[in-house]
Length: 230
Image (cartoon, rainbow, N blue to C red; front, top):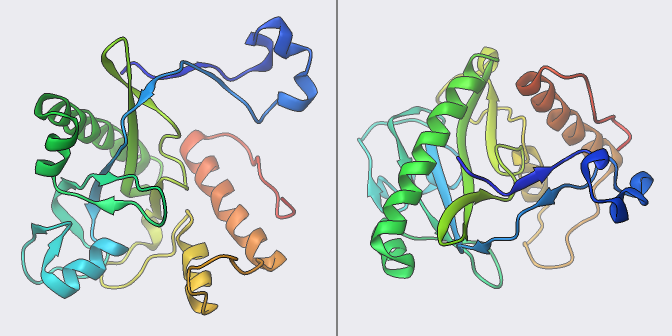
């Protein structure tokens, strides 16, 4: 679908930016400027993270009833759409589709749900062929000339939950190739989620960098781009 990305290689940047190629190479992109829609469009195909916590407590995920008897990390009968609203402080707030429609209009809300489900389905199929389960992910959209376009990061370890097929087993937490191990470490450290966050030991940084690199390699087929020292 139409998206914000224009260029990723410095050679394709405007001349004024190519003059700073050494600074920009490998860490910058050129994008269209859009009017951001302040809704995170989350699609969940598996029961994990905060979704599992809510289901265990109430039998729902973001207020949507689910069948009884599901276990942690289990594949859902059908992927579910669970939008969230951005807030100025703290974590994003899960909202229902009715509130989403009230905030941005029913037509736009339906279109963003349709697009989110379609992208998730295509991405999950792509990832599975490469040995990765896309458990859940989030998309962000903006308006350009009055039409929705895809913006922000897409299908990254920061915005998705990746599991390796060969190690997947429902009924327990999975060893994720994403930021979940960082969340787990912070929880185990006793951090109360108030600033300042604890400093990360080098071995934790190295382990998480390795997981991000593994996800990149499996999904793209490219060689390692991150080292244990980054």
